[in-house]
Length: 294
Length: 251
Ligand SMILES: Nc1ncnc2c1ncn2[C@@H]1O[C@H](COP(=O)(O)OP(=O)(O)OP(=O)(O)O)[C@@H](O)[C@H]1O
Ligand SMILES: [Mg+2]
Image 1 (cartoon, each protein chain N blue to C red):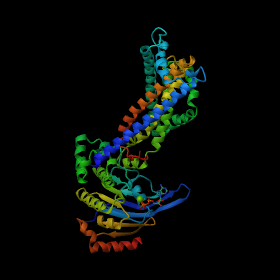
Image 2: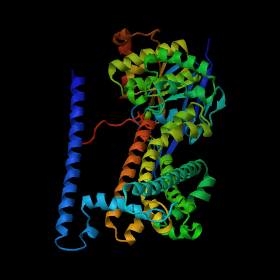
Image 3: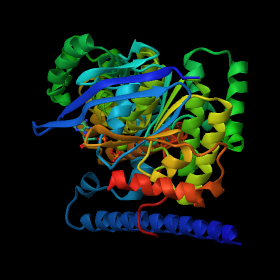
């Protein structure tokens, strides 16, 4: 009885949540639409400042076909059409997606690995940890010109730049996580006969996982931004390149379209990641609901 | 037949350096012998140095002066001959019950089939065989203590050091776990040092009760209550007489 009730209550809450989300998004879109149309009474550049939604979908979106062949195989420029627009957007999305994911993975692997080594040995701490503290103080965006000099506008440059950003954030995160492992775990393992190597493998590494999954989540989110910044400045391909092309021709609708794509990808990737991370950290005790009831 | 000395505590002192730069003298030339297969309870008021003494025996921190011999060898670090059940929960939250219990065996690379057999045996002894695949977050406080106990026991130390393992539990659970501990101790006898500040618990479990006060042994009480011990003992007159005697030392 109470179980049935509970399920119903939860279902009801979920429904309400979707309903409220829909309401919020709907309101924003209506305000947008009204403002966009109202603008056209005051200025002839209304679609450049804030294009109405139907303009974005029927004009801006197919318009991407005119970028066909830019940074991709094919003869430059097609008449506006949905099919070629999807090809263009699909192509550059895949490139950007690939860069963000491989860059983040590469940076995460090196960052976490090095963080663990720094926690493992004093020698690593002095020779790697301390220089890192200095590198960390250089603003990430200030490194873009350096990466351009080193790698040109190449594929590798953008990928390495994303990897570098993830690396810096995660190496610090890992060092911090190791410091936060409760001492009692280490004492317990040692009285059960663990050697130093075993202590690292069986206690330190599993114990830092929850903190790292949180760190990686933030890093993935930031990787989109870091990747965009790098693409924006230095490549022929990717969504960032599409963004800058749109800007050069003052196609505000297309810029909004790309921003929207970024949003979708970022939310989607985050969702998949959170599912995986929640499974891996299912052993972590958590309070069921700390927010106020809906 | 006089029993062999298992743990020889020889004029051990401990001075802590506090964060605000003062020196805190916790143990003062404490000496004590603990015999083989003996069940010793250490009682004393909060902050008198019980945990400190235990962790020095375990080799988790050095004494400021003095030394501890186990089987005649100086203790210089932790070892699997001395299993510890800590005051706080120490079991690994990321391991299921079964993987917690087999931890020590895994460290020693005991083959899997043998490992599983030993683990099953101890899970059964503490009554957790139905919870083998639970994560610690899915257990009650008392069950977590049992997991720690089973883990340490499965690792087969010769000495068991326990720091107020049942301190945070309710009275009936505590009584049940005390009985289970005595059952374990009877089947697999180990030299046991059990810290508590519960006089009744000390009387129920021990062969000898050591009262600590101001970093020293105030007195050692021979507890001659017959074994095996059952719950009825707790209300008998001899039991209460010992309680009265010990009260005097604890003020
Ligand atoms: N790492 C430390 N640094 C400084 N002082 C400490 C440290 N650990 C313990 N102490 C001090 O040593 C004294 C004894 O502590 P200990 O933990 O051994 O007490 P205890 O007898 O186990 O108490 P309880 O019954 O409350 O567990 C306390 O006064 C405490 O403040
Ligand atoms: Mg204590």
